[in-house]
Figure: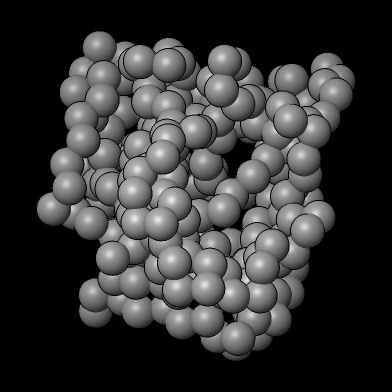
Length: 234
């Protein structure tokens, strides 16, 4: 199975410079043309080559997230009037060996190399039974705005929004380092892109994206989720 992310976000107040940067980034530093949207080869988030990530830690020491790319699970969205097929990544989150959440996240990369977040289907579990779908949203259903998860060419202090779903969550993101170091069970990763995330619920999170690997660490106020193992298709 697969892992539920445990991802959160943060809120921040906007100034003119941030808004200008976000508008630029939200346009994908291009025109959002998707010739091969599932072939996600972004240097800091190469999901097309992902087989499985295992992340540990977080709010509870026994927390474990298994993250698996699932190209067999297909989901289609409409962007700029054209059909775009997303790559599905499944997160299965467990605490103490019991599954608490399974999330199917949908991503697409445009021809410029920007990675967009198009939504998530969420199943929350208790005692092996689905009890809710909190946090779920989809482009075209809950929002008309694709989230920009990671630019093709990250630059310092550029701002963007990976989730813009006002009735569910809004997120303001900013790149705060291009040379961050992350020490995790899988090893030491240097020259990471560090993204500061502010969510509409007031929370703040930091994510570290390692070159050629993807997200290796997520820091929240109540704990950090760290990469334990990373398996690729090739």
